Image 1 (cartoon, one colour):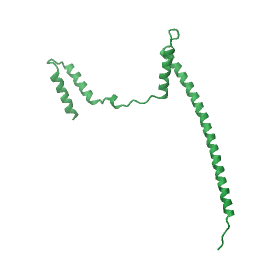
Image 2: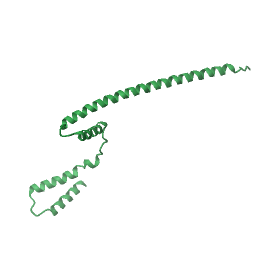
Image 3: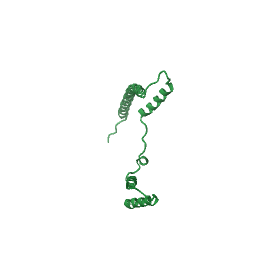
Length: 140
């Protein structure tokens, strides 16, 4: 089926072209037609991925730098990227420290809950023992 489509396209090209077609023009046109058929359009098939946290941070910081920039304190693109990279590193470190603290707090809360659960179970066991002792036994 692909071959018939290629032949149809070549036929259309030849009928629409002028009478004097050079060999080079014909070769270029046919190779373009062939390439169009063989290569799927990647842009249509490929979905654009979501920007990462770093991409979003970069975009935000670049906008801030451009806003604050004046003729006296102009930075080159390389300097801006370096500056933002340093900010990103600092932000990432502070975030990881904050996460560690949150994890510690969560662990403390879990430990507290575990202790409370154990105490509740022990109390339940004690109550069950009291109930068993208080019931009179029946002998047959």
